[in-house]
Image 1 (cartoon, rainbow, N blue to C red):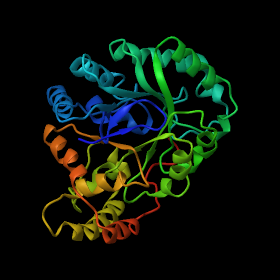
Image 2 (image 1 turned 90 degrees about the vertical axis):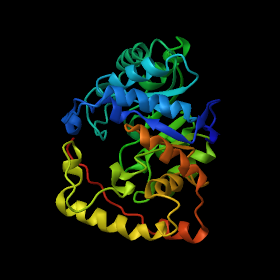
Image 3 (image 1 turned 30 degrees about the horizontal axis):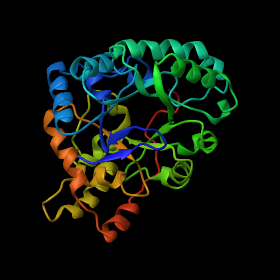
Length: 326
């Protein structure tokens, strides 16, 4: 495993992090209304397997199974030296954010209340990084989030703070990042969605703000396990509609020419891409299956030639599959 100091924090995190969405079993809100029953036994083994293979960064959120993901992490790794990030959901339950009145989305009392719920779910351990689970730069001058963060830090509930940026809209947080008032940012970044590299990443690096790449496998498509007949029994059935699935599979198939040496997988290429010098400090990936852990970690051992990087940079695909009204 390789490790990286996360921006201006003192946190030394594994470059491959554990994404806790899958082990939670979904989220009972909006487009996440489709729940699935994750196998807790397998989830716990995955958590332990990841830890035993050097993963020390675990990302979760209060809405992941209504706290279930947080509780699993506490149950399995509560006595370990790990770095845990979790997120405060918006009070109006809208992803992406759209209400310009922060008092209807992240009032001070709500942030503190939900952070303390996560703190309890995590076994009364200090939260290493607390995120707001969505963001609008319209809120930049509000005292609500600033006062809440100060209170939570003073009470020992959380150490560092950041935002999880709206899907496919990295420029929606540029004003906040430019202030340098947060410690870490989390954003969708992968071979298809490279938009954070244009403005967000250079600005975050200038302000020494940590960068976490989420959705590195594009909801699974970049693992190259989908085909034209793949069906989904969760929210992805609305993300990968038949026509979109065909286009996605076609685009993934065009990248498979990088697999001719037989020494690496598409998953490994996708993860390694997210960790190039101009990109993220760490990336979080789901590992519900214990067998995924070793494959993900080995992505750190592969190399991408300059020609391959140029080719991958050309695969950027500007699109959002999410419904507009969520």
